[in-house]
Amino acid sequence: MRRILLIFFLLVLAGGVYADAVLSTPTPKIAQGAPLQLDLTLLNPTDEPAVVDVPDELHLRVETQNSLATIVGHSSRAGEVTVEPHGFVRLQVQVSLPDAIVGDVTVDATGFDTNPVSLQITAEQKESAALTESPPPKSTWNAQYTLVDKPPPIPISVYEPIYFLVGGDAGLNAKFQLSLRYRLFDDKGRLANHLPWIDDLYLSFTQTSLWNLHGKSNPFQDSSYRPRLFYADYSVAKFFDGRLRLGLEGGVGHESNGKDGEESRSYNMLYVRPVALLGDPDGLRAYLAPLIHNYIAESDNPDIAKYRGYADWLIGIGSKGGLDFFATLRKGTASDYGSVEVNFSYPLSKLSGGDLTGWLLLQYFSGYGESLLDYNRKLDSQWRLGIAVAL
Image (tube, rainbow, N blue to C red; front, side, top):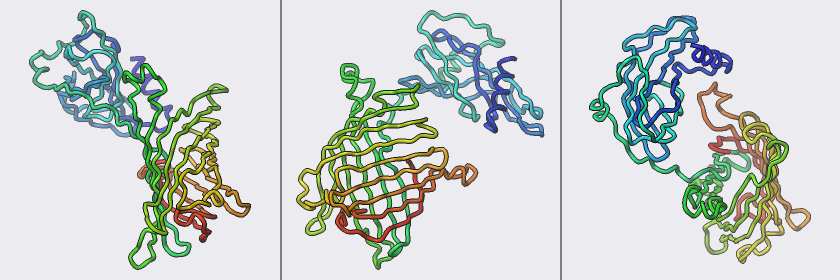
């Protein structure tokens, strides 16, 4: 009873975090093949009685490191269950686990919006468990579960911000960016066990496009394609209880606009990017991450360093859960050349009351070379507004 009251008290303190059902277990560690008891607590934080239709058989999702199983648990009460205002009702769910499931396990109820429960199943002789009712027979269990191999986690993540923006300066136009990175080696593989650094090797691809929306055929003005192969460890060193983090990224990259003839632009580079982050990585933080590079095989644009320089200075401050500011600054080797791109973002969930995902993104660009095609031209400054899928 104390455990249930504690759960209810924590939910109230969470400041509006509401779950209509809480899943827990009094036996977080059981023997392999032993029966399992779960507690399903139905909560009603409203001022009116709530009626919940509880089936006799509850479908549960059991997940281990390497497998998934869909199983059936039997509830101590079935049918309509009334939960009094600001009250709760606790139900017992009895489950019989197959011998094939062992190790660290996560259990989740598929029919209710509940939290997952973590437990450990030890590979030892079965131990008796005192349950209020007998577990369902093995024949019932075997007929209703399927154990399958769990697919490995997808080794793809966001690299640079992904967004779509629209502006009106010098005619209606759009700018969008797609950026993903792929981890080459599994951190649990044999090579990673012998070479711990190898799972920090990545391939990435980023595309940034400018789209002319006011022209007759709405052509793309230019696109930049940037594949990279690099090593990245963003937590090389930590100081002040992790409030200051130093990291490093470095590798080889290519950038081109995919055109030929006089409009062809491309170069290769070796680069290094030191990273310094101060604050909470998931909260309020400030960071500096300059990308320092050279130019190799830049025959299509031999004077590009004059306009872009040898460093992209990325700075930022703010919070992904609130207002966030980040900017990229370039200073060409010639005194009057360079560019600035400034971004302001805010979560759409806060603007929409939780209905929308992503961020509202406002971007300003001024200077030379917003596109690789126009690396040596200074076009009109641009304000654009749109949505960022990932930052």
